[in-house]
Length: 139
Image (cartoon, rainbow, N blue to C red; front, side, top):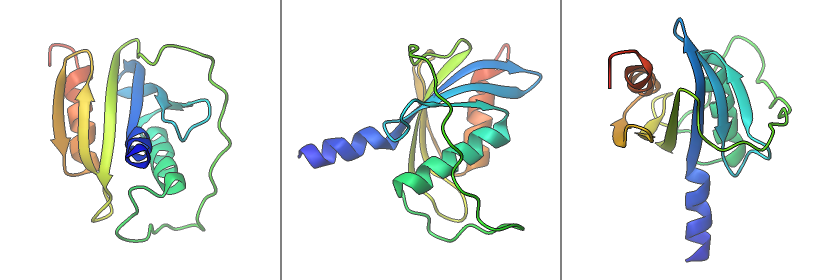
């Protein structure tokens, strides 16, 4: 039973969005697999760091191998993040990636301030859900 609880803790990544100016996402992400958390600036950096985390945890395992124009990249060293509350200045999301199929992610995302949880079937759908919570006048 304890092993099952340990695995569940690693399934959730807390994404703290501190700014979303002109559609540029910036903030921090926390997971028990990250020693001090990770900072990100921009959607591409967030997605790459999240994919690196999933590869490091080997959970969920990818359904297919990643492809690219260059050799596989190594994981970048984690920049220390000071002890902060795991809450974003703009929004906070609890992200659970349950599957990595069809070269994408499937899972659920919970917008903590809005108290809403939605499932997503692809990274694009995840991005659109997060954008709807972050965009002015939308909820």
